[in-house]
Image 1 (cartoon, rainbow, N blue to C red):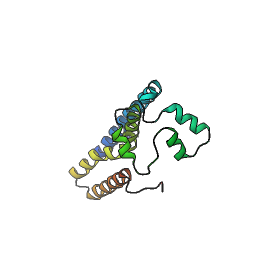
Image 2 (cartoon, rainbow, N blue to C red; image 1 turned 90 degrees about the horizontal axis):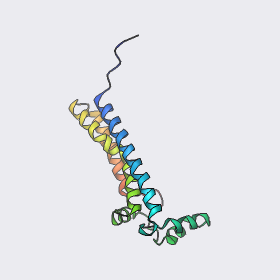
Image 3 (cartoon, one colour; image 1 turned 120 degrees about the vertical axis):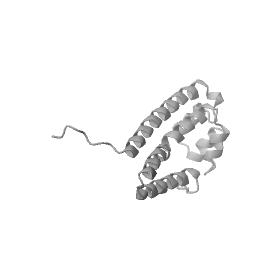
Image 4 (spheres, one colour; image 1 turned 90 degrees about the vertical axis):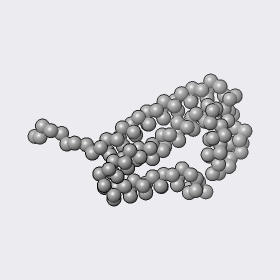
Length: 145
């Protein structure tokens, strides 16, 4: 058995570290936001009491949005997000956005390592995946219909 463990590629190491810490931070932000949402229901974009009532009454998604006081607009997530960033709902959305986009942020130091090592196929793949993530987050591709 070999006494020396294999060396981890720096791009993989940096990718893993970034994913690890951003996932932890986004979970903590989302957890704290849920506490604020329940503590201050009147300061939210969507009142959780009205939302839960509509959900448990069996209403459709558009009716649930209307019960919360905000009509549903497909593709307007970023407008709602930035317009209400400092509400408890906005903080929760920030935690979700940060956690869902973690691959984008983790690919940045990995991409830099690929460039330094002149591994251009991995540079291309990383850029392609980053472009897919940005395209998906932009709302240009609407899978909801």
